[in-house]
Image: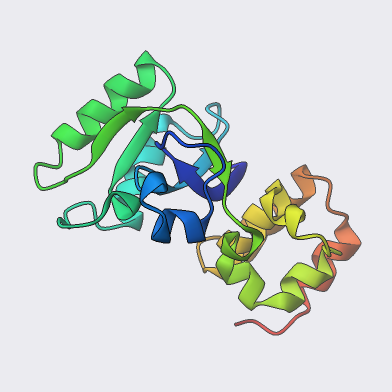
Length: 176
């Protein structure tokens, strides 16, 4: 993954926020979503789909629109792959929809695990909540969640311009 962003997709009225989506019926068609930017030379869309299905309960029903399992598709290739992935999971209640507008969620919704481990965040020199939307924060969030080994984290941070000095400082912090 290059970058992830929590946000809102699938709705019609512009500028959704968590408060509006939860409390204002005119924003009731929005879905809480994660936008994933990935390098198709390093990971296939099929692998992204597998991660999607491992990361949440696509079989649960009775959810409001806000919490539905939805794949927002950008092209015919994604549509075909998503259809195949859903077809292989007969218990899934995942909907397939065309990707249109995506609005970033509020900063307190971004990289939730990383924000709970402030020393990681601060070691990168991040002070602006908008930096939670950038690639280094995505890498560190995966590390904080235990999804990336230290060596893979260091490699990916270096690709995104994080210096060896900062990477060394990150790994000198107590492990969670």
